[in-house]
Structure formats: structure tokens, C-alpha cells
Image 1 (cartoon, one colour):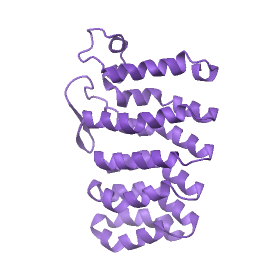
Image 2 (cartoon, rainbow, N blue to C red; image 1 turned 120 degrees about the vertical axis):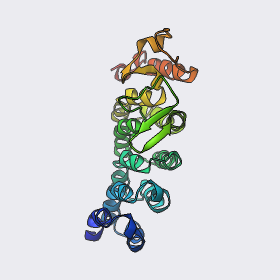
Image 3 (cartoon, rainbow, N blue to C red; image 1 turned 45 degrees about the horizontal axis):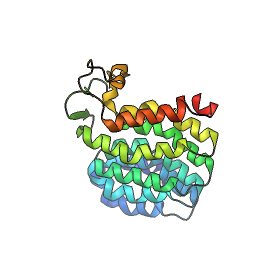
Length: 245
């Protein structure tokens, strides 16, 4: 356990050049029989990923992290869920991000404990922010979004959001536990910013874009409009007072 607790700090100190000498220890600790050891590794995988860089995340970190998301012990799964947003930032590459979000969706489909689903719902906002246009970028103009990790295609970002985050959001918004639905609903604005950045101007909701005014340089896509209307029907005009709240 003590090795797992300090492992991420060791990797960060030694750097990616020394990873070959640390890889075996990482694999062994991630598969340790003690849940508290796996929990410590799950909670620090994002630090290891940051130290290794995007080039090594997919092959060296992602397989173990995906296993954590489906671990038999709830504490291990919850430790992993808390770091999904940070790991997505470290991964940077769309293919790796897709795999990670797909693993999260698969894990949520098997979770019976509502607290785990509640935690996932709370993390939706930070996860969506990873895919939202950065301040200072023009969401309504051009085809590229510049991130700290480098240029990324807005089309790829939106595709990841629609294919992975929107289904998870809708699933959690329809959860049988009210606390889970409440937590998921709070991420609606962040999700819209990632799924339909054309609805926002300078980070603020654009009423003109929603209404189709010519004041916006790029009109929302049909899927964006449909999604916005679905949110209005499900929440603002919903029969449940909790949804309307």
C-alpha cells in the first residue's frame, strides 16, 4: 500500500525516461489483491499519465484505468471516477479520450450502487469542460479549437461529446435516484457548451443562436437544436417538480 501511495510521485520525479524500470511495478500494484492498494493507484493514475505524456498514456495507463472503472470493489471504482476529467486532459488524443469515456459508460451500466452513479453525475461538469472551447477561442468561427495540449478539431470534440457524453448525461438524468438526477442536471450548461458551442458567444449562452437570429455568424446544427429542445421538455416543462427545479 505504501508503495502505491507514493508511486505517482516517484514517476513524476523520475520522468518518462525512467518508465521502463517502473512499468513492472505499476502493473503489479494496479493488479494487487488488496483493494486499498488498487484504490491508491486508481486515485493517482492521472498523475502518472501527466508524467508520461500523451504518447504513452494509451498503451501504459489506459488498460489499468479501464480495469479500475469496473473493479469489484466500490471504493476502487469511485477513486477512479474522481480522476476521469484529469486523465482526459492528460490523454489529449481523441482516440484515447473516446476509449476512456466508453469505459466509463460501460462501467456505469453495471453499477447498482447509487452513490457511485451520483459521483459520476457530479464529474460530468468537469469532464464536459475538458471538451468545451477555451476562453478566447471563437466557438462560432473556424474549424479549430486551440487547447493547451495543441490544436484539436472542433468536429472531433463535438463528435466525442455527442457519442459518449450526451448518452451518459441522459442516462443519469433518468436515474431512479433523485440525488443522481439533480447532480447530472447541474452539468447541462457545461454539456451544451461542449456539444453545441455555437449556442454560446464568448462563453455565455446566445439567445440569438437558440432563436436562429442572424446576429450569430454560425447557426446551430439541427442536432444541437433538437438536444436543446429535449432538455427544455425534460426539465423546464417536465411533470416532476424536481426536474423543473
